[in-house]
Image (cartoon, one colour):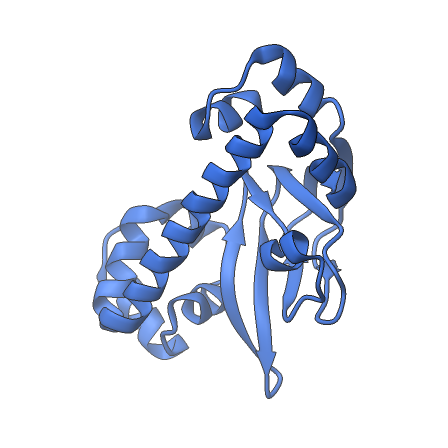
Length: 186
């Protein structure tokens, strides 16, 4: 976790060690809904092992927003940051292990250590940039471009996540996804 956080923003080792010491281990079996619509995200998670997905349900159909896996943060970010109810789900795809930190402790440590506050401002900036890039791809790219871009960025997920979930994430019909998958060497 130290290396991951320091790549976002270098933090004094003593401060970072103190911050990380407040994170606790948390293990969740596969296919567990960690957060559901209407629930407020009380924790920020750092993924140690496993894969998770966040998704909306519309007419009983899942619309996948994101996948998280090591090393990355997980959770429902806007619910965590604003302490308001989530509008969508966070579910484990596989057995998952995390470190987690409560909202209250995170806020306390950011007030206590300016470096931690700067670290998470920069993390939020990176998250926003990633969301804008994803939104652009969904709006501007055709299905071939979306598929190829994803295949270059995250080829490992083709073997780890169901093709149905990947198709939903890319907003590609399952039949078209299968054709694209079979036509491209990954």
